[in-house]
Image (cartoon, rainbow, N blue to C red):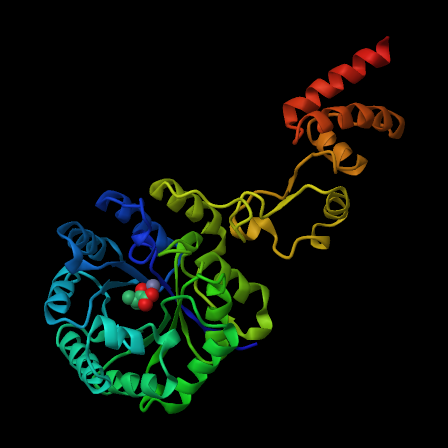
Length: 388
Ligand code: KIV
Ligand code: ZN
């Protein structure tokens, strides 16, 4: 089956790093960039060079370090931003400048106090100026999610006319519904002049919990790049989570879309980013949360012990998790207890299991979770009572 590639544009070090309390130093950024390159991302957005000398330095150092991925720097549609970004990226094997401007009515009216024709002009000029430094220029239409489609197509046409290679359509405020975002991408595919020569990129925020769904709607309608972050970190409620989109494409082969990501590094990368950023991952986070492959109810545990596929759609080993976890609680049944006890070296007959199970329930009612060391205690109590 012929599948088409979706480019993975990682913005953990730029949009992700904008999270309150999550400043990374250059050394930490280099460590994460090296891992992202190893993970197989196509683009690493390394920072916003004009924003501070530290960010400039990080983009510069990452440009020297990264050998496979394109290294990208963000700018506003401002000449000095673009010049500084080009300077920061000068050592990159594959440099990209990411420039753009707000296109929604509220951005035009309140942020820029400008008119629509002025925005179109500034978009074109920014792309043309960026193009004088690098071949690869990505244009973003900030708040595209709330921008009227007909105007958005005109701004994008101007960006393409001036040499943009990628058109980023951000749902900056996480406002769109998947159907609406998908239709927006379809509209641009059909109405932007020169679209056949550029890639459309989805950049979705999670304010309504739809960042991943919107990105998938985008690629289902012809976009071929997804902007995302490890663990979905990012402004406010975050961005599309890299691990989610990668696994969605893997688990749904009929979509005929693939990425170059090595999924076996996903769990470890999630832990590394969480550690470096001091940003804890919610336990129920899809793919990489502590409970993503943990089973605690008796019915589910019984099923998973018989065959993992009864309650798991992903083999944990595929994303670098050693094995599914059976968490013993008062909801666990005999099958789970026997399974866990066996793993710890206790082979129990049916009769023995009945007695141990009663002791186990006493423990489980008293504690929320029965840990491995509790199993040893339960077995000791059982052995003593059996001898008496
Ligand atoms: O969310 C957004 O609009 C952005 C752009 C600056 C690309 O992060
Ligand atoms: Zn963003």
